[in-house]
Length: 113
Length: 116
Image (cartoon, rainbow over all chains, first blue to last red):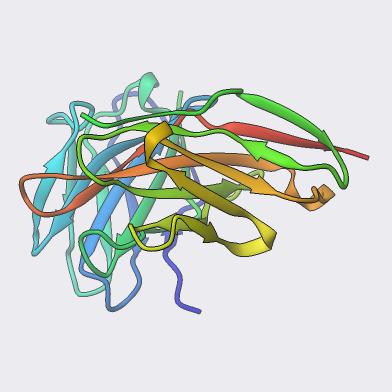
């Protein structure tokens, strides 16, 4: 069964460093998303991406964040200068059509020290 | 903006007992509603979804949910709890944007504990 994959599973970085979180969505999906879950809190929407551009972004998704689909398979989230409060689990998701269910990856746990 | 409320951040049931996890939503349009389960150190797995077809939706692992428009509810139930059901459960509503894509608005989650 096709699945969304994410790498790395856990990333530890120092405050101020840049990180890139990688995702491989399901191959025939066209809509891509990033969510994050701070420990003990609910899952929050960050950004949606379609047709090689951002469709919608939340207030959390400020200038420190960017997304890219560098090739036909990967979907990346970059945080330019990490802060302590960026520590969270980051989930990538994809869907085949706008209202269809989203399939989530296993997440990348980002720890900023 | 739409919102989702899950009453009870922690629910404990005995093995074999009924599981009832509550979810209420606010939406100005007919919603798409979802239940996801998250096992420890794992991602989100879709349990079931409501997309305006049948109001009683059956999902995986014996779970089902009933959409009640008059109560703006989408509660998750399972007749008989199993130890393997211990996990965190998230209710979500799908919200469309002007761009045509949809994002999920999640509830705060309910951690289910199953007692032997």
